[in-house]
Amino acid sequence: MNDHASLIDELIGSLRCLPGVGRKSAQRIAYHLLQRDRPGALKLAQSLTQAMQGIAHCRRCRNFSEAEFCVLCRNPARDRGLLCIVESPADMKAVEEAGFRGLYFVLMGHLSPLDGIGPEELGFSNLNQLLDEGETREVILATNSTVEGEATAHFISEMVRNRSLQVTRIAHGVPMGGELEYVDASTLSHALSGRRTLR
Image (cartoon, rainbow, N blue to C red):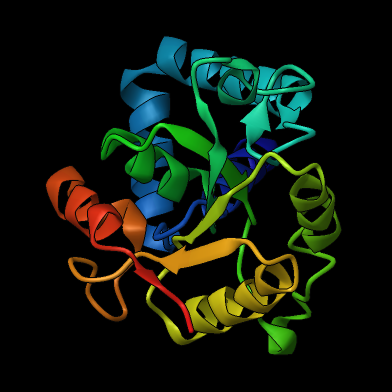
C-alpha cells in the first residue's frame, strides 16, 4: 500500500513541473490517466522520453531540432537577408503563422540579471557569429513587449548597429505586456508589416 501511495505522489509531483499545473490539477491529471487512459499515459511517457533524448538545438538559429540544422535553416527558399529574433520557439511559431518568410534566431529567454540570465545564456556569441557571416541585411526584433523584452531588444539593437545593419522592432498590434505566443496571426502580421527602425 505504501509503495502504491508513493508512486502516485511521485506522479503528481512530476506533473507539477508543467506550467500552470498546481497540486490539484496534477492530482486530477494523474487520477484521470490511472483510471481512464493508461494506454495514453504510456504513449505520453514514451513520447516524452523520445523527445528528451532526440531533440536538441539547431546550430544556426537555436530552435528545437532533431538534426544539426532545423528545417527552416536548411530551406533555400527562405529570405536569408531577413533575421527575426524571438524569445522562444512558441514565439517563432506565432511569427511564422503570420506569414514571415525570413530566418530566425531563438534566444530561449530574455535578459534577466536577477535570474542569472545574461548574454551568454541567450546565445549572443552565436548571434554575433551569424551576423558576421554577412548574409543578413535587416534584423527584426520581435521580443515580447515586456520590460525584459524591451531591454533585450535594446541590447541586441546596439550589437546590430555596430555592424551598420538595418534594425527594426515590431510595432503596433502587439499590446504592452503581451506575449507573442497568445497574439492572433492577423494582429501579428500587422505588427510585422508596421515594424519601425530603431534610432
